[in-house]
Each structure stands twice: as structure tokens, then as C-alpha cells.
Length: 263
Image 1 (cartoon, one colour):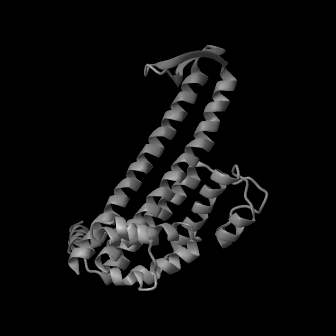
Image 2: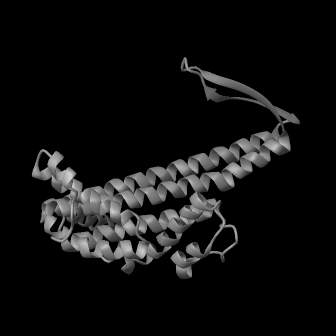
Image 3: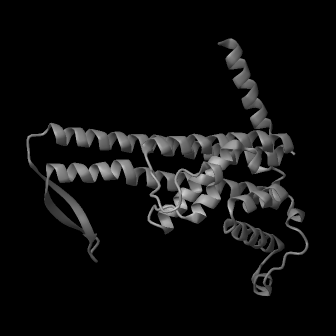
């Protein structure tokens, strides 16, 4: 089983690398925002001129714009960007990384063990007739399974994940925090950041506000969500290793133990 175990571990490692990159980009962007506000505050100008592109011409050249803003107005816009828009955008990235990771892990398992899909699943005849091989039918069937799961609630998704991968995501404490993070993401996409009953129901005890209140998003909240997402992936590494042994993960654990003992 080391083959599939190594594939699963490699995929989780790729996700950890993506997370670390997003974390670094988030903090670099936040530092840039702070430095810009500091520079504006330290300047002498009451009006500040900025030039930036506002469009794109058919000849593939940008449409430039120059605008003068009062110091306080410009600072307020930067504060809104740094303390609201940046955390929102990076929360989107965290959810996307974990959603993609879970789907890819299931794809690896289902390609190795197609019988886990079950014999009762139907597939459109057009897909079968247009396929050039059994492998292509297999891939499209897996796509269908993953697509159906993507529209389910986190708890229903976790139940399906357990039936297919033998791992119960609900046993991971950080996954419940992630459910709230994903619900927050959905609220900012679909309801302008104002919590509703759907958010409260999905988030359960992790709900941060009641229905009708705005959901706060800060850099601290991003860091909390980042840590929870990282914990889920590391938890998955161990759980998957217990089922499908990974020699690569085993070597990593041995190196870590040796390094700690040497310290």
C-alpha cells in the first residue's frame, strides 16, 4: 500500500506548501499596507497624486488614470483594503486549498479502489458512448462523484468522505473551525458579509455573530483560520498514513525524531 500512501502524503505536502505560500503572501501584503499608510502619514502633502491603470484597450495597452486624493480619504481606503479586503481574499484562498486537497485525496483513493464508488451509481450514456477507454469512463465517474459532493453541507461531505476514504473529518477538532471559516467565505460571496440563519446553522458553536450582524474579518481571524487549515492537513497525513502506509511520511517522522533527540 506504500504506493497510494506515498501519493496521498505527497498531495498533502503540496497543500502544506501552498498554505505556507499563502500565509507568507498575506503577511507581506499586510506589511506593505502598513508601510504605505505610515509613509502617507509621515508625508507633508495634504493631497496625494496617484497613477494607476483603469482599463485595457483593444490594442492591448492599458488605460492610465491619475487622481488626487486627500490624505485622510486615501488612508481610509487603505485601511479598508488592509483590514477588510485582504483578509477576505486570503480566506477565499484557504478554503479553496482545502477543498481542492480533499477532492484530490478522494480522487487518488477512487482511482486505486474504484469499487468504493458503488455499483448503484448511474452514468449518462453519452459519456459512455463518447469515451475512448474504460479509464476515461472511470475518470468521468469520479468527476461526477466529486462534483456531487462539492454541493453538500460540510457535515454531509464529511460523511461521504468517511465512506470513501475511511477517515472521519468530524473527529478532527480543527475541521469544525474550518466549517465556520467556509461559512464565513460563503456569507461574503452571497450575502455581503452579513450573517444569516444558514451561517449560524452551519457554524454551530463556532458561530461568531448572530443572524443579521456583520461578520468581522481581520488579519488575526485569517491567522486563526490558517492555523486550523494547517492542522487539518497535518491530521489527515497521520490518519491516511494509518490506513495506507507511506514510506516517505515514515522517513519524515524518523528524521524529525532524530533531529529532536539531537537537539
